Amino acid sequence: MSRPRLLPEPVGLKFVTQETPPDWDAEFGFSGPLELEIGSGAGGHALEYCRRHPEVRFVAFEWRKKYARDTQDRADKAGLRNLRVIESDARFIVPRIFAPDSLAAIHLQFPDPWWKRSHAKRAVIQPAFAELLYGKLAPGGLFDMRTDVQDRGVTMLAILESAGFKNPLGSGVFHPYDPEEVPSTRERRYLASGEPVYRARLLKPA
Ligand SMILES: C[S@@+](CC[C@H](N)C(=O)[O-])C[C@H]1O[C@@H](n2cnc3c(N)ncnc32)[C@H](O)[C@@H]1O
Image (tube, rainbow, N blue to C red; front, side, top):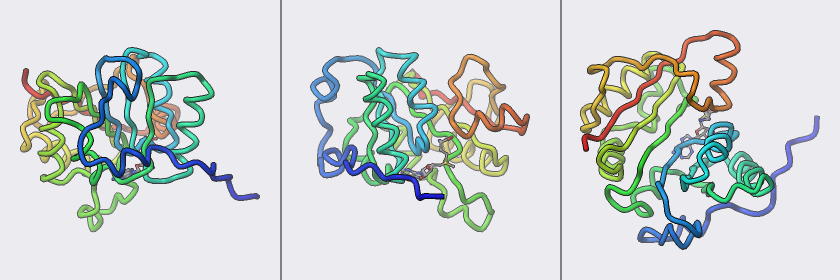
């Protein structure tokens, strides 16, 4: 089988060198809620979410270049004006390009391919990054998290709640499946197979 083709044009690099938040209104050409996805993978969630919510300006981080470029390319070809994919490590760029209280929602789905307990230190949600994300979310904003690894879900919930996020269902309680929500590429597999997914919808108090 031939190797998948890497599109030649990098995506989102101008944001990577930016020291301060860009003018998002100018960047997208319209104003509206600003949302962030970390680790958009093959882009199933980002693309469908942007299609359903044209009023949202959606910034997706994916450090695997092929995935990032393919997702931006598919968005452009579909005429989606509201998605910007950035092929970089979200942990380094998010602190600089979003102003405090500027995000209406943060999406994090099946973030860590390293599911062993010994790999926990590689997990994207660590206390300092959780606190940083809390600061970027607007009061009343949503943190939407999903994982297939129960242990990881429990740990992420604990870290996020310690950072200040409130769980309307009660501390440590997962959210039931909602057929209205947009599934990610990976989630579609689990929905088809019936394997469990652990979800949370946390809020920053208004
Ligand atoms: C297991 S995949 C899930 C992808 C997608 N969210 C889904 O549910 O189909 C996790 C993705 O997050 C990306 N990723 C992990 N940590 C990241 C980071 N710090 N910055 C950008 N991308 C990251 C990985 O490259 C990978 O594509």
